[in-house]
Amino acid sequence: MKSAAAGALALTLVTAAGTASAEMYTGNWTNTSFGSNGPVWIQTEVLPGDLFEITVDLGGFVFGSIDPPPFTLSGTINPDGSWNVSESGSAVFGDISASLSASGDVIVESGNLPSPGGDFLDAAYASGTFDGTNISLQYTLLLTGGSLPGNGGVEFTDYYLGTLEASLTPVPLPAGIALLVGPLAALGSMRRLRYR
Image (cartoon, rainbow, N blue to C red; front, top):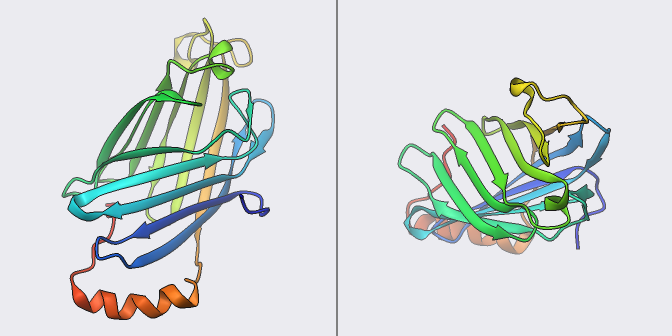
């Protein structure tokens, strides 16, 4: 069950050695066209072999669904810390791709959306930055048959606009996990998802 704290965005990094480095980002997504908003939770797990999984859980009214189920993207972290992933057939986002550049630029695109979102949306686009402390995204929801802002589109007729803003908030590890971190860290090199 999700936390009752509005606007939580959680990012948990787990090292390949099995130790946890918890980081929490708090914020909201906001549809600036209508003023609707909701919380976001993101959990990231770094696995052996530079593999990772990102699980995203959006709360509120998203693409015509109330509190849709979370979805997971997985991929490989490049040596410079960048990554690029894609997934087909997400229950909420359809065909989705996401990338993070070595300099912290984020791009997310979603198309072929299933119902109910696909009944009125052609695609969703988001771009912005992640600097390790702050996440700042601006998104555009393209309505069926609509045009994007740079192509003569009109807000409310062709598209809706929104943002996602979140900032780092320290979160202590549970006592049992914290006791394991020191001994496990001594067993091998620590790995961490790099953002620059």
